[in-house]
Length: 424
Image (cartoon, rainbow, N blue to C red; front, side):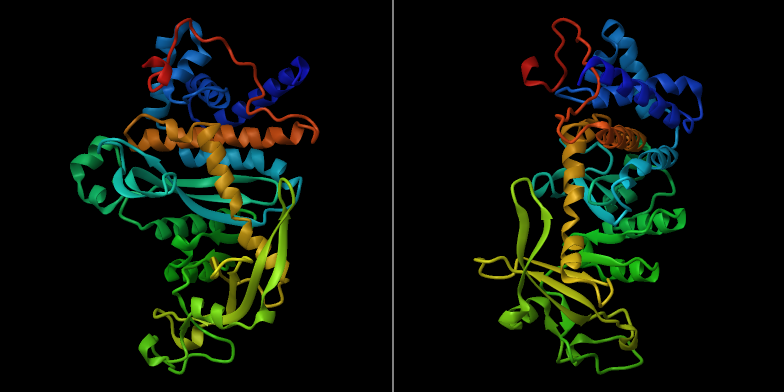
């Protein structure tokens, strides 16, 4: 990137920050906002407050440190208003390559030491692929095939935290925060997206969310179509069968035709399986073997007459001993096979979101312990990420992509951030 391009990027960044500043409430927050976002975008080993202060104000690091700490941990600006403004400014760039196609639900974990960081608990951490001491946040992203952007983000607060008034007060958890499961938080975010009038997308989740029948029922009640991962043990009625009981909720033991999605997949004839290509990868088209069939899902919360048919989509890659993935979908019965697979596989974008948010923007580098700071830092990371998403529109396809459009200022001589192996 030449100097002229950098100058143009800096002008666009100044305009972007001005847009964000319009919803902060106080003019004295504009400087810390600009510096915090700049620190997140600049390259660096750590994106916590101390090293960002050194990068953005090398000559007055101590004062900058206090300014950024107050901005992210104490100042009472609204995460919701800032995220709304980010969406408003970034959405036009995303839609230049096509309309929003999906609303992607997911969560991400942040490994932690100790027990004082808000929401920390020994629980499953996707980053580590196992149970560990961590925080977990649930998010909703809007996406198409060219880009994606988180638009809602909330920390999951375990029951132990909800009941512990002392821990809540110390971490600054708002009084109106009650216990909600992760699928309940997700449904709340989807309900908000509907009420806010976001461009409609098909809801996509992995099996940890898609297996939750209340979430699926809630999305259907809101008029949101879905393609959700499920566990193979979910019970369904195969084609040509259906519930026998009427007028009262189902009891699965009274429905002998119910079988697991896994058994149904194994019982399908060979000609039900087709090789489908869904998108072009870095070297070649991505493809696998899939089957789909119309089913009704066993649901103990609904009357049998309220059960509608939906798609059961199954992936069984060539050479595997058994199917590897299962989805349910309320997309129309006449949807094309490849389009259905394409929606199921579009959830990969959220994995890229979190990879870039953590590796490039420092989503997991926040070192504070409070509720407000946790969410403020995440909002600033999403804001910085949104700017980078917009900037990709300005880069010719043949040009190399840099994580930052700015030159990196020199750090104070001998500076080493806390947590750096160089400081040991």
